[in-house]
Amino acid sequence: QSWTALHWHGAPLSGIHCARSLGKPGRRQIAGAMEYYSNGAMLGGAGSRIPGVGMGAAPLHGAGLPGLAGMSGASMSGPAVAQRGGGQQQSAEEVYHHVQDLRVAERREHALLELSKRRESLTDLAPILWHSFGTIVALIQEIVCIYPQLSPPPTLTAPASNRVCNSLALLQCVASHPETRPLFLKAHIPLLLYPFLNTVSKDRPFEYLRLTSLGVIGALVKVDDAEVISFLLQTEIIPLCLRIMETGSELSKTVATFIVQKLLLDDMGLTYICATAERFYAVSSVLAKMVNTLQQNPSIRLLKHVIRCYLRLSDNARAREALRQCLPECLQADPTLQHLPEPIMNCLREDSATKRWLLSLLQNLNLR
Picture (cartoon, rainbow, N blue to C red):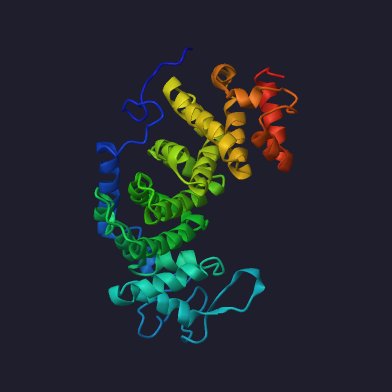
């Protein structure tokens, strides 16, 4: 079958600038997600109690929050939240007080900062955040309240950006945890981050916001999960990532390219991107532009993800045929990889895995 230039989710693509402002479908998805929170069905499941705590478990005094799983009736000074790495256990009293403070507007900013700083060490933080009453709603409020500051002329300040990024860091924790990840998807919370990914300002508050939002999506795709891939492919994440890959900072480009790579590595994602010529050329055009940019501003980690995307695309028969015509010249100038442009050569010398991937790519395309 020949490729037919169709659309990305029903709207015509315009070259590689395909991450336009969210149209009616995107707005409907966000509105649907917000409407979902009105009944609280997913936000405080099991009666807003931590899993494993029976209905008779005593709540923390003054907090209205249940004790930790398996700690029924324990006092505030008794329970502890397990830390990674075998370190000393964190006092449950301190953690729960911070979680409780998220529901109080005057104390929320400090609580966000403290919890985000400790999120890497607290293994049970994600279930606590998800199942404690009102916590996820508070984090969502932090996100949606700055939407008006994104509209031109942008008015987002550094303190406001830092505050919402702390909220996003906690949501990344929720997105990473195997217990809360499915609930996070079912509530369509990732859609609430798309307005941040859709911004174009290069000011630091916006760049920081985009990068942190990408981190949440990156946490979702890091673990191979068909449910995550299926969810993301039904949204506009690929066009949004493509624009960031083209115009963002090096770090944002790297995370966005990693997300596209993980989508491609799944058979469902590869089939989706290679289903139409426009989808394929939207992706391959951005990758080619990135390769050209890397010759002026080399980045080993970014080149690694770009080459891996190309290699995965070559697993599709129609994409493989197209790549023979559109693979950047600098990557195929010398099949032995001995006389490539110096910036590319330097990257390949420092990363043997990327060199192997490029050799495999050229072999797949019958270019060596």
